[in-house]
Image (tube, rainbow, N blue to C red; front, side, top):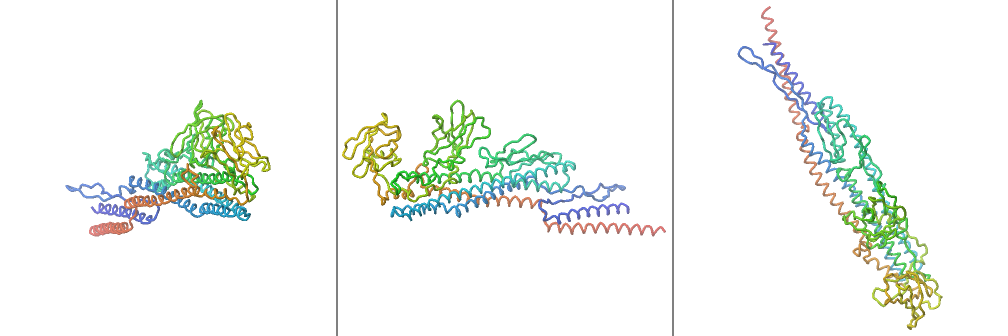
Length: 636
């Protein structure tokens, strides 16, 4: 019986020692990130029968378990993914909102200065100082748009760098998880330290993308990203990569590689910080760039058109103030061909009507033998295009020229009509005398007829019968016969002549005729010029209030303010979403900690309890020893 007492005491000491060790380990790891609380489960040894009774034989530690709730861990991962996505979106949108509010404020300010300069010119149209200042104002708005484009380009580069850095870290985690899985297979998932490290890596992974965990019987875990990309399969680690964009190389894509097979990943299904970066770049940054390009095209086209309707200080038809909207420097990136196209067509996008532009992007597809379709990427509206020679017409304010090569069936192109304009816009006028403040007087016998002719040039003001005030000329044009008849101010005919449409050159000037001019339309020209004439300067100043953009729905300033308001609205929405995601994550984190986290008060109480148990078991051993000593002494 004394020997049994010693064994019982020994098992108690060993069990208490194990309990103390587990409790101590919990306490020392209370601040270890990713640590899960451990408990030692204690049971009684099988009892022994002596006579007609059964006596306990002691205790032992059956298992040391890691407190882990898979459901709570999954909820925490989901919460982490949503929080990281919301936080990344909020950070990026805040940066962009500040860009438009601080650096971007130069755009509307410069535009206001330009119109203020035109108002000053209208007061003193022959003042060279005002003219020089007006050119400076035009240069300021061009440079403000250049700077905004540069800043937005910088945002895209920074976003691409962040995407690359995240894919690199995901690859590192994938490799580490593969190694951990190998070790866990050896212990059949019993190594709690490795399990904690595995969960910590998976939790970090859930910051970058949505994570699906598939437990395996071997103790390992397979990991999927975004519900579609297998990142870790047992001990096999896959790799992700950042590759050039298609059709625009500067817009990175992500791929996944397993063996010799590489697939492009759909970023919209990723979630987390990675998904947020793609969403920010593709749905906010690039549209903002295109809208800045739309504004640049509107400014350049409206002022160049206004210049062409007036006389400069030399009495000549006004030349362009800004670079032509279809100049190669203003049209970089308007058309991008997808890498899997089998045709070799080279496309060029020509802006025909700035007012009809939406500032969006389109997908052009060709299906043999002759089907060309343009799909608006924002609304999904599909528009059939018509091929006239080498030109596709029917777009919203633009046409597409096939400069060389040919399309093959199934070829696709992304069309961005306003791309590159904000970077390319610049003032091309160098002489202040070139500002066309004065205006010719062209009238018609119909209410809209004067819009059907466009003065191209003054060739010779000293030509016979050059039309001046009091000696105006009236042209009766027959487009069908390609002839025109001219009448003087008294209504006498000066003769009939032939012309090659659309240009007519006669009596010292040249003008173009619209094809819709009928035989009943008559146009009267008075091309008198005076340095004090401010007619065209007043007309240009009125452009500030004219709704020139978005099919007559917006002024030039409205385009910028609309983009700024959209960015501000998204920034505010991102802030609200971040607060909500933070609350959900906090709730999930609290639940995990309540089960798996270390409660120091509870562990301190356990420490005292197991210490007393250890001391009591040790006392039993002392008692058993004394009994043995007494027995030995009694038989001496």
